[in-house]
Length: 128
Picture 1 (cartoon, one colour):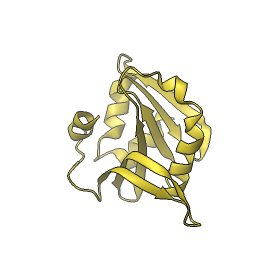
Picture 2 (cartoon, rainbow, N blue to C red):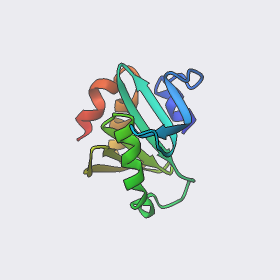
Picture 3 (cartoon, rainbow, N blue to C red):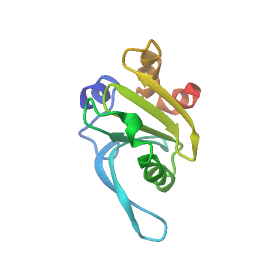
Picture 4 (cartoon, rainbow, N blue to C red):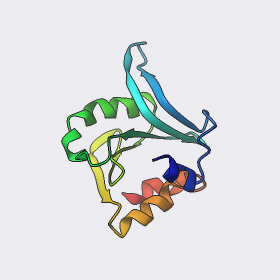
């Protein structure tokens, strides 16, 4: 995961840009959970949940409810859940809108282009 973020231009040493294991709290002050990774740029936040390589991401559909809370509490519309091979990109506020991409798909390169720091604000929504 980290090499992909670095290749896409993200500064993993800057916690204002990339944060890991961030606690998520709702507006009422209740702890929602921990998010594996959050990317931030120009008011856009992309929430990423990372699973062990080879784990079936599709087996984590139940977790998407919790994941949606992360997105809602971070006021973002884009969330990603991945095991490194399969990437599910969802709109955080409308869980039914999702795209599943494998690193073996031609579309994966379009996704990586959208994940690049310099393009994140404009390209991520274009995937849908």
